[in-house]
Image (tube, rainbow, N blue to C red; front, top):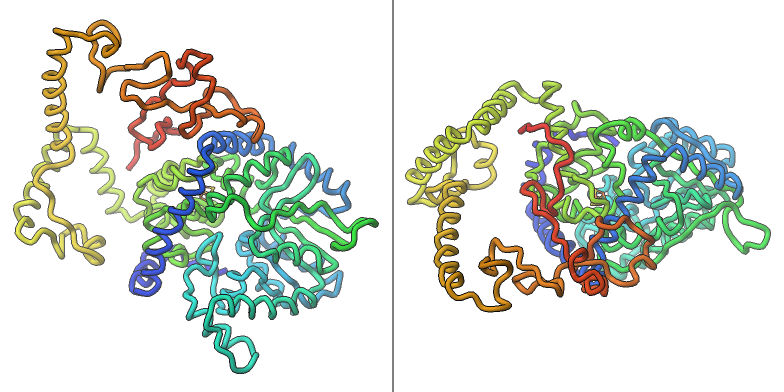
Length: 577
Ligand code: SF4
């Protein structure tokens, strides 16, 4: 796949001109978070399971050599062939060699972002092998000669009308209407069925590899993965080294978050575990199975400050919640992985020189980190890439100078506030009549696409300080009568009023505001295994634990941290940009 990440700004500009696609992206940006949030709410264990999944992924990555060796041993024991590929070229040549050994002319392929990364389809095509994508979204974009725009829904950028026209043009099936989406799905199914039966080799990806038994796990909603795996005589699983997990229950725990985060479903339609070739007692299945494990710089990432990125389980939630992705779509990112995860993976898997615009596209709003089921600090990693870009002098000199000036000013708060206060006041005076600016010097990037709203006259810091003063005055007034006449049960401590600024905790585990503090729910350990105490919190269920412990341990409140939405500590601070 030709990479165009270095022209991200031009790509984005082009994407913004397409009103139809922009409208569809807007709808997706509203819809996908809604279904994900509804699924998480009804599940009720998001934070707890996220902490568990993070722990499992970190443990697996820290002991990757051990678990890879164990997986290889078990997979070989099951009758598989296991191959390690250092880069995309090597993976492609391994797959081609297997196909040639079996004189394969047709390959049925399930959805696999790894093979997009290595450009496998084109590689096999050049060797005269016809590869047919069998995931509906992948099939649509293959027919259209396009690349995926989303890691879960590759054809999300296509409208039903576009797909209809595409099928009418590509399928030589005579006159027909294809008026309904279901007609198109039926037609794609019929066309694909023929290819499944023709294919000598099937290629699929894997959502997880299980070290304890050598199985690979795959989830799909269409069942095409199982047809690719079971109908052809040869199966090739193309995946990466970071997919390996210690136990089957770790894979299923990951699955609970993966599916809810990706599509808002409680479970995908098909969850399959592949052990190896057909055994004597099996009625179907491949006669020969290969597992190809790609590194492609992942070992380098593991040894770097960006290793948390390898925790990614490819759910796509960060894309669905990213305002930049919603604005410009996946193709603007110019390579396989779009959105926040792609803005980190692309520079790491290709080069920062080729893709330094991507980390700079982020507004650091933090939505991606809030929803990421693997708890990856995506905005921090993006900031680190920006820092690296600046250190390696990849950004223009005037941009670096501007940032240095900003950093210097930020280290002198009085001067910073005075200058920003003055600037905001001048903008307020100039723009108060019209309410916005169509052009602004030094902000052409903004005003070329949208108007710049005229400021309200005061900076955020000025408004915040005024609000703080008003709050203090009000609290002081409210506190005075309480001190004079304290009522039993309405105060906590000697004369300390209940309300803002007071710990106000009662023995029943309630805060002064009457809110019930979160704690672990019953049955959790049964579902996803033990997790370290103190790191897991439920999303608001009351457990018997709070009674047993007098409501203190279970009701311990996390400290808020100004730098993160979940009150987490910054991973490492470099005080840049
Ligand atoms: S970075 Fe997190 S939210 Fe984004 S795809 Fe990976 S696991 Fe999902």
